[in-house]
Image (cartoon, rainbow, N blue to C red):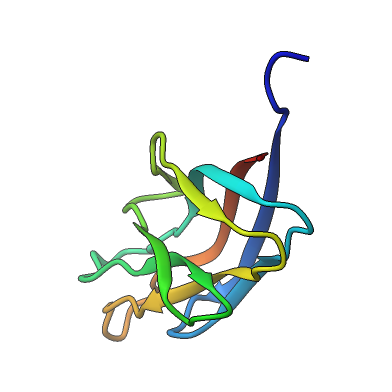
Length: 122
């Protein structure tokens, strides 16, 4: 095989998303390289939220965000990172977390958001 296979892990944020909410986690046994991240959902009802909210890849060992992706607007909006390159060492926990609360006032904000993260083994 000439290239490492691409694999995925995902997460789901049920209901209206909230600051600090977790949606998925991976702890690889070998080093990986995260190559892209996508989110879909975020149905914002009838309101334009500002901010729309952010889903982040967070390093469990340090608590710091490794990558932030702002939720798109509209019905079942899709948002993607494009190509990225984030190395993760073996044994490092990486989780998906809401790091920016949507500002939607009394209206329903992003909900039932699904996230997918693509990676390759190193």
